[in-house]
Image 1 (spheres, rainbow, N blue to C red):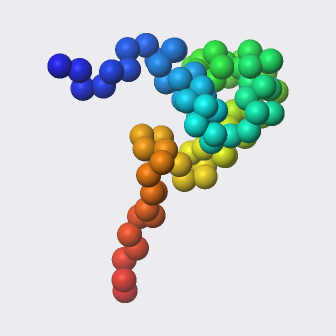
Image 2: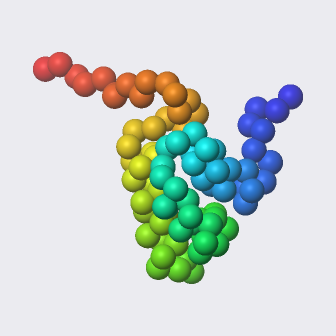
Length: 88
């Protein structure tokens, strides 16, 4: 039984999301081209502070247009409902 099929953090998480998000039209070709031209994908998954300035900017833009825009990474076509608010 596999509870979470993610087997290799380096290949199966952020790099996979970058590709999936692009091919599902969640961000534009210019950002995708900048990520690939600058070889940023491996840098996104490193647990260090050694990320080039261009890749850091790419990551910020990628985050802004995907998870920052309220996209549910587990169901990109689903509706992302806001958290309920308490009535006082």
